[in-house]
Length: 168
Image (cartoon, rainbow, N blue to C red):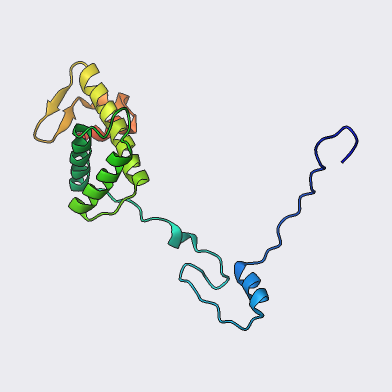
């Protein structure tokens, strides 16, 4: 340490040596032990990113409807005290959704769907409530509007309601 300086000098940065865990174990074991292989490792012993990613959540109209029903049950049960589900609520949503659909989604996937549905609902509600002269086609479950109105509204969230209503 230099006089008057209370901190020790910072060590110079050295990039780590590129050696794998397998190399370190081989050095310790003296290359005499067979090393187990894992399917998530490729021939160069690097983790395969594709195998570590969780499965993409695929949603059908039926699974979306079940998800909305499960969420409504948890809100009624008091497991959404403010703007988000509490831990018990999320745990119940994950469990009930799996029991009813057989799809094992994690909390992040379900929360992403919640946020997407909230955005779609808000856009749909704004159009239905605030736009004068529009109707509702009960047979097609769509907003009934002239073509020139649809051309003005290029927002992709709103545009999807031309051929189909909010999906529940």
